[in-house]
Image 1 (cartoon, rainbow, N blue to C red):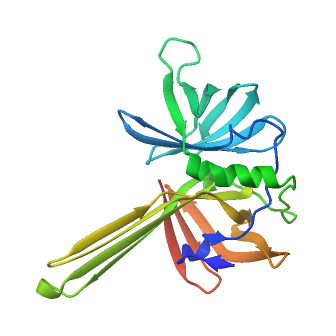
Image 2: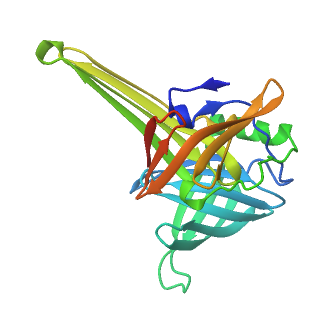
Image 3: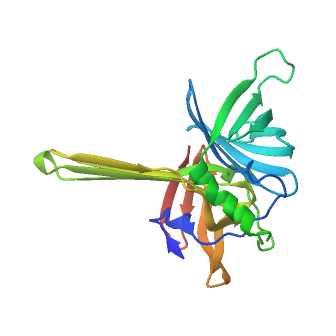
Length: 263
């Protein structure tokens, strides 16, 4: 297995077992949109039959989606159980676009929030190839769960500083990962910067979609990941996790602590 820095506790790359829904693969995938409030990202993955789940993220908050697809139209609910928020969702597939509406007022007294999402083809190709290549369900050990509080995009940030005056150097990195319902994970982008008294630089990378290989689950307050290595399923015990106020603290089995923040 190949590990990224320490996302060390959560961010691996291996080959995943996905399941096909029998519905158009063009529905599952990654989408983006720009509205007056900022950028939105949408990720949709198949579950079984016509059922799909997903994550809607505005850079600050994530909503979990449960959707049913009928032909080119879909409906369902968007929710954030930590805030006690739940609202209806309707929409329609139109080519590489997704007409998406949140029903903010079920009594029809207010306007719905409507967004026209465009498919991110580069990120979606990896998702759809996984869906097309396998009919195998993901197997988890007895007692495994995927708590609602874990779902969404989590970011690990690190900052470095040294020296002062002409010798000052500052640097930082940020890596993000989305925990999806059903146990899959998706890369959600990364960035880094470095600066000094007479130089500076920065770089960023977009999310790469579902990681072809990693699944996650919890048993009690312990977090695990699993994947295929050399044809064999491998489980990794990442340690104890604790979630509060959009922060997740993971205490590794070696005692090392990692703090992640939900975006």
